[in-house]
Length: 468
Ligand SMILES: [Zn+2]
Image 1 (cartoon, rainbow, N blue to C red):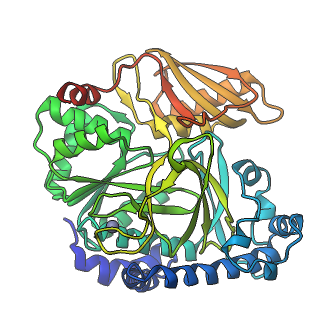
Image 2: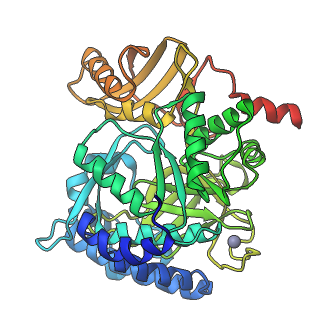
């Protein structure tokens, strides 16, 4: 029995969040009201807001994080010398390699530091990362999520479904908490390991019964789901819209998903490190930056066409672990008219983002495996500094691995097998490991972290090309 939208606003956030998560849910409601208003601020007011936050962040990072103290010293500056965004752009960007190597020095080390949790991701470039996240950032990310979903027509607390990936850590207490949490948020949350026709048909039926108004999932998962709906001629849930995230959304994918489900697709760009960065609105003409939370820069690359360049982000909220001019590993470009969206919101827009790309991996029975699960196996195995997974035959996955010091190929192979046994069950694939010095992202098309050399494009792609 779903609890209703009022329950989320009156009970879940104010009463359950403090008890279950130790998070002030009322603060999320307050911030949500704030973001609804600030999305209409004129660009000048937004720049002032961002600058105040950047100044506060710089002073804080200089005082409490040895890494940033050295970083400012390296350009002969103290926080007071950075007087505007032009000066700010002189601070050397924070790379993933630095984040990986200097976690302790990046964290707030003051005695009254805000408590934080350590999160984990492999991100878009195959380099596993650990980083700190505090509650203030968590509450702001949640509030912003609701603001972005309103652009699709989903009010806070409306029925929402996720087709997500699950990771191999299995903690019963956490699982139970998650279940209660999703129920209390009026959400259907499905972890999809194997994207079989049977599993997708069952999930589809559940979403119809749930009357889910919104679906959020990864682009490649949506493509597999859409393909199954078409082949099996399934009725579709009454979605108002679908959010595609985690991977690059190509125009032919958008078209196929929209045709299949009879609703619009909204592209969302973000990462684990700073949360959601940009989101498409109802005008579907670029992605609005969540400027109140993240200051975004693009460093145009002269070798790339059309102003495309590295996306750098500064998290204006996470004091426990400052991300200042962080190189996301994704490429993007500004919209030709960043503040002139027909929707009327002056939040600046990116024209597009080129993030990660997953090919679809299938086992010997032809069952598609969720790309995030493969990513979890590779980045979660001990001894892996960076990886790429290549499927060359239905039985076999090759992992190209940059090892951590002291790990041999045999040890890493054993760790990969162990990790995959937990995630997808034993004997699904043969594994092999090839140790390499580096996995270079290609400037033109980004690193392809999960590559299939055997699987034809999913049938969905074929449908598109035959109709166009
Ligand atoms: Zn807009």
